[in-house]
Image 1 (cartoon, one colour):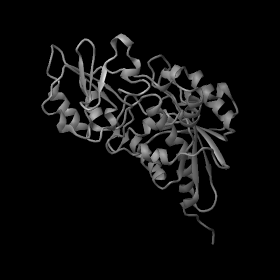
Image 2 (cartoon, rainbow, N blue to C red):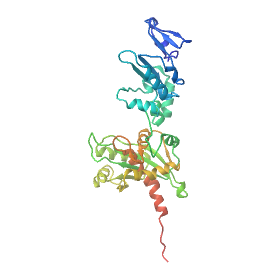
Image 3 (cartoon, rainbow, N blue to C red):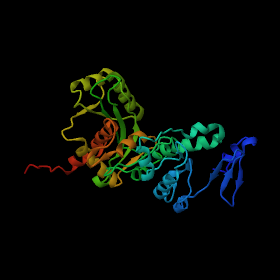
Image 4 (tube, helix red, strand yellow):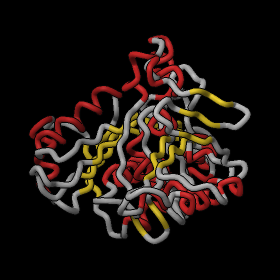
Amino acid sequence: MVLGESGILACSPPDRRPDWEPSKRRLVWPNGGVAQLFSAHDPEALRGPQFDAAWADELAKWPNGQAAWDMLQFALRLGERPRACVTTTPRNVDVLKRLLERESTVVTRAGTAANRANLAESFLDEVHARYAGTRLGRQELDGVLLEDAEGALWTAAGLEGARVARPPELDRIVVAVDPPATGHATSDACGIVVAGATLAGEVADWRAVVLEDASLGAARPSDWAEAAVAAMERWGAERLVAEVNQGGEMVAEVIRQVDPLIPLRQVRATRGKLARAEPVAALYEQGRVRHLPGLAELEAQMTRMTAQGYDGPGSPDRVDALVWALHELMILPAARWRRPRLRAL
C-alpha cells in the first residue's frame, strides 16, 4: 500500500508525495494530512486512535477479520461523514458478506483485465488459459464473490476437486435441455448441458464427465433448439434429452423443425427439483462425476442448490439440464441393471 510499485509513494506527484516514517508507521503529507498504518494481526492496536477515513486492503484475507473490522468502526468517528474504502479479492468470509449486505455499502468491481496496461501479456495469457471459466477464475480474475449456501448439495471445494483437463474416451454422450416456459425477453434461461460417460465393468465403476454448458439466456424456442442440436453435432452426441413439463409436445416439435431425425428422449418431471438433484449429488460424493473447465456459471448454480431448495435468483435451469443428462447416463442405466429379470422355466 505504501512502498509497492503501485503504492502511495510511487503514485504520488512529486509536489504531493508524503514522507514515510517507518518507525512511526505513518505517512505525512505536505498539507499536514496524516495516515497511520495498522495490521489486522493486532485488532487491539485500533483501540484508542480515531480517524475520518480508512483504507482497508484485502479485507477478505485478514487473519482476525471481524475483530479488526469491528475495532476500526469504533475508530471512524471524526469529521462530518467518516467512511472506509475496502479493496479486496472477494472470498467467502463472514466479515465481507456482512459488509456487502449493508445498505450503506456501495460496490464496484473490476476484473484483472482492467489492469491490462500494467501487467505482462504473458501473465494474462497464462492465467486466462488456465483459470478462465473456472470458479477460481471467477473469484480471482473477475472479482465475483463465490459462496456456498447453507446445506448445499455441492460445494465449491468439491467441484474444484472434480475438475479434469480433458475427458477420457467416452462410450456415450448426451445433450440435455431444460426449455423455458415462454420465449420472450423476460423468460428464464434455457439450460443446455453436454455430458458423457464411460459405461464399463460393474455399475459402481461407471464414470461421467460434464463436457459443456451451452445454456442460453432468454431465447426464442427456435434459438434454444438450434443451440441444443448444434451441441449434439459438436460433441457427436447420440441422444437429446428434453424436459417437456413446460411445453409438452411443442418442445419436440420445435426440436424436430431443426432436425426431423434427431434421436430424442422426452422426459417429464414427476418429482421436485431437489428430489431429482439429490441422487445426482450422490454421484459427485462418490467421485464418479468430473467437470471440464469452462463450467463456472453452471457450478455457481450448483452451489446454490440446498436441502431446502434453490437458494438463488430465478430458476436453476442449468442444474436441471445437468440432472437430466446424468440421469440419462448414470441413474437410468443403473436402474435397468438392478431390475430383476424373469426367466421362463
